[in-house]
Length: 309
Ligand code: GDP
Image (cartoon, rainbow, N blue to C red; front, side, top):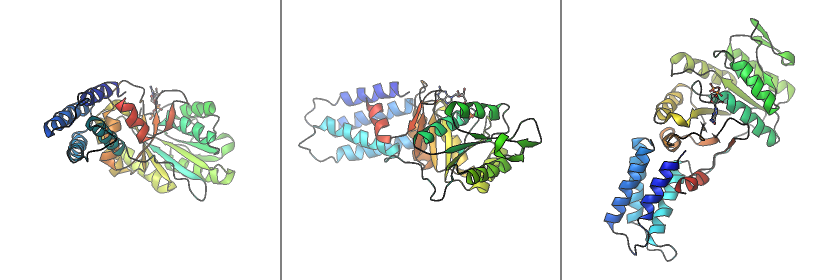
């Protein structure tokens, strides 16, 4: 991801090298190339417009610096603005003062929620937490057992209804009504409280497209469990659609942070660069593969450096 954007941006900025002073025309030309590079990378148009306006304004008004030549100064500005659209500071999970901390995952089917639940569980364990995964995707066939497999791999227990019965038996973990994801979510949180799990990760159902039932269900789970964090999980490969999806989840469910998945893909990366600006919510984690370890806290500064090569 970002390879071609990265090439284009470094190319545009390289042209400025060796110039003693930058004219407004130099800056305009560079800004145009950056604009094209961002649009080609599928960054949403309003985000590109605002970004370019800021770059131009700052580059034209830049103080003459002793330490940096004009080209370096523009690179610095572009870097800072990229960090800005990626969210600025690293945003960390807000853990509840009174455990359990509840983290709810929401997003379209196939976005990578179930995979993420395992990764998050694994990561939380590494951080010294005792997480419990809760299987509330009762829509997609196999989602519950997929979460159980992922949990096993991560060494994290899973609270889930038994798929074979109407009143589900969850092994040692209590009994809930099968088929009612809100009840499962509520029971999962109670289970965590009773057995001293300090973080609950709730996997929820997704649909192939946005629909009201999905939003209603996710919203009901949010209402019932009052999560400390609602993470909107989005496949970075879906390009521009990521923005529309994010907006729909923002108004339908609401979320406190974004997780970008499939950053290992060869898509152009515009989703990653748009979602923060469009929703105002920070990107908190990035997932870049199918293994448990292909996952990390999202650092805007590191991502900007990676993009600028
Ligand atoms: P869910 O429907 O949102 O729960 O999505 P899943 O967790 O089932 O993921 C859908 C597919 O994407 C699965 O085949 C996952 O293995 C795959 N997947 C999830 N995250 C990543 C990732 O970061 N990179 C890649 N390459 N594949 C991923």
